[in-house]
Image 1 (spheres, rainbow, N blue to C red):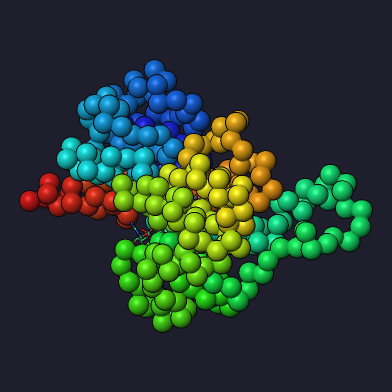
Image 2: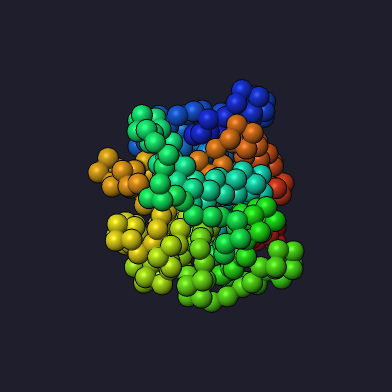
Length: 328
Ligand code: NAP
């Protein structure tokens, strides 16, 4: 019996063909809801899943009794109950590395846009309000030579810091679960206590995975410790920040501005004040969203699912112990 793959994110024709040449594929290029009856029907028969953006709950897993492997088209795996997958012997794979530089580009564009007020002032020109030379009330702040505080210093955090240190002469501070001596030497970066980072940084940039430990890692207490001139960048997940506390800090001028790619609820609810706030640059979760990188991520997921369903080691497994245990 041929195995079946359920794909629920857009793949290009070549990638679909690659999957179809080996397995039966149920394809939902644009899935509106995991409650879609056709999706549920395909889930019941699926040996492999490939996709992103759907919260894979234990209830969904109960509806997928044949499932062997999932290839997420993302590096973040907060949409998956990893321990539960491991317990059930289901292999989970993600797409690290291929999106690192692109996501770091997005992070740096948020730093630049927030500091130099690019969006706000481009809108000012678009509205036809540019009638005279601008004055100090519209000046921004420098990026070069400032202190960049990285909350999370993994692949993407280091790539952002490299841009800051080598391209903009920034001093880099970081707080991270473990020390990173090699990149410290390369960039002259320094690991410090979280509170020192908050106190000393001109830019505080969050790029940690969302876990029980990092949920609401940055809230009222943390905004209070930042400089009044600080700019906060969130590129990780919306839930890493206490969003009402951040809005409050921005409104009260406790920090100067924020550059945000991710939010507590996505897409942003219509009643969110964030898009209307002049000191906020809000992007629609575009960290890795370039043609090149989204294609590379989808390709990594295709390769992962094919290897996994063949019983081989995938390129980037999240819970490889599933296979080790099965092998013994
Ligand atoms: P990574 O290489 O695993 O880096 C994550 C870093 O966070 C690691 O260095 C880890 O420390 C550190 N960390 C984990 N828990 C921590 C804690 N409680 N306190 C301090 N540091 C902690 O992952 P990555 O590839 O850089 O991606 C990071 C995250 O970015 C993803 O999980 C995803 O949520 C997000 N992301 C967002 C977008 C977007 O579109 N906006 C795109 C890609 C990724 P250790 O090194 O000691 O383990």
